[in-house]
Length: 276
Ligand SMILES: Nc1ncnc2c1ncn2[C@@H]1O[C@H](COP(=O)(O)OP(=O)(O)O)[C@@H](O)[C@H]1O
Ligand SMILES: [Mg+2]
Image (cartoon, rainbow, N blue to C red; front, side, top):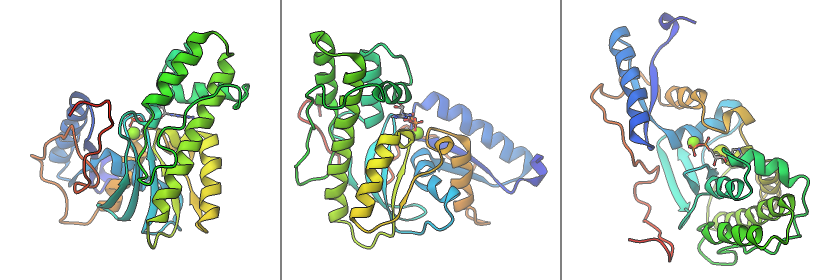
């Protein structure tokens, strides 16, 4: 393709580290201005949220979404493009962050998710007793800070093999996700599917567990192909296409946003250890 074949320019406008977001958005603005094509400023989280529809044409609104990445851990109902209702979020760490910190504790390097998953295949998921924070609580929120600390103590005790720690951590994470999702789905009406997106959606153990939850609720389960799980440009282009409507583009003076919640009405939820 050449630029002439393109109908519009889409770029991430937030949320995220503002320096990188600005560089991308300014480049897209320059392209839009030079070509006279419309600009679509995309929310990175919306890119993740709509990415399953890129590969699955049969996925219709509204659907339940588990959005799990390095910076976010949320359960949402996706009612349409730009229409999101948040049911749960994390009160401390995101799930991907917990994978990355576990990888660091085990000396595996970054990004930790795929490395922890690989090591976990060689370990015993029952070997290390680890907590399941918030499991059993009536609100569907997440917490992973205590799990991460328990992983650190297990490693420092010198009693366990790294593979057993990785496997036990991953099992604890799966148990938390399944329990929290069940609570959220119990209070969510009218959804047509259960969907997972974001970097952690690449994890096979999580995908397998979610399939079980979907079955329990009588819902089809959809996960994007691996390449569309971790951050990628195709999902931003796709969100641009979902938003594409002649005359509804964004102005060229639109700003990059470090914070940009999908559900602006959702309340802030804080953990006990987090300063206000
Ligand atoms: N196979 C996997 N298992 C668990 N976590 C994974 C896996 N692959 C990637 N991740 C995690 O996904 C996160 C990256 O998510 P991504 O959406 O690409 O980035 P960001 O959070 O910056 O938007 C990282 O925390 C990474 O460890
Ligand atoms: Mg991401």
